[in-house]
Length: 356
Image (cartoon, rainbow, N blue to C red; front, side, top):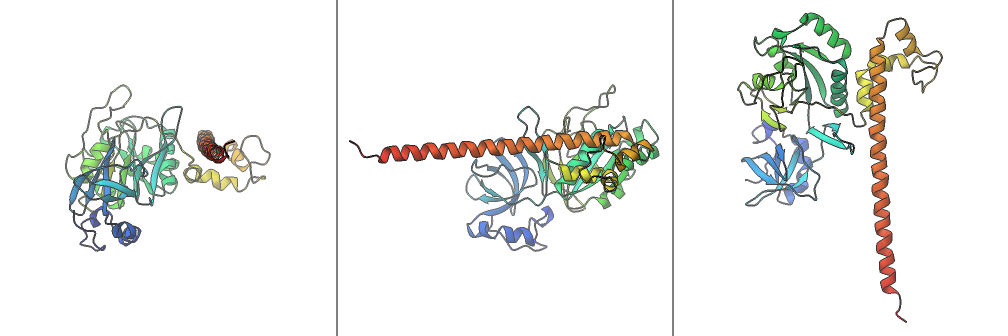
């Protein structure tokens, strides 16, 4: 590996997103003799990273924050490079991990565009689309909904396009087919920077990724006819350069999309409810039974589908619950730290007591 260079159009990592801001953030690490790298893939205890001289396999240090695909990092050079630090993330897609001990799990970092794949070969669940949109908006990246498999659509694609657009105010919704090439040129023009593919198993993410990459670099699999689901052909999050510029991160199909304190993202997804809420009598209206609630009035007169309000309430409850768990963990950790300090001080004072 060579020494880090000043950012320029000829910098080896420019095609992966390296720029002047990253160079400034890396200055102290450069002074320490570290090398810049972008994390391509993460395995247990190791990270594959692209550097100024190529791709290397680096060990991770338990003393540093765990990396995820898309992170920019500082590598400590040597026969076996070691991850010395993870640079601050500009954006991050984070969900609640599965299981009773739910915690924030980073899926991808420093993302510019989130392409949400929704298959037209089966009926897309509106609730899942709304969840993925909330995840995308909360990350700080720009979401784009990609309706895939238009050639296998079970309903009129134009109707599906209109219905999906109603779920995603302010979001581009594109109709595509990797089999016929429909919509791929438009999609390529819309996706910019670091692009991450999100969606359920069988949504056609890997096929879409291969079309964008211009080569069959991502494994694809068959979909079950009875429920339209596919098995996980992508088992790791992996970052690959796009021929038109930028990079692509493919992710395993998401069977569970837990929201982790995504209140702002939810408000963005349900922008029409947020707008209506401004006309409620009470500023803290919960849109349940309050008098003069503009949101409930919109449901009654048919301007707002009741399903949207039910979904909005559900996602807000889930997000608030996740936030409260985080607060509880923080309090518990601080309490444990205080107790440890107290035990240490007591032991110190006992040691200093004069012996009689």
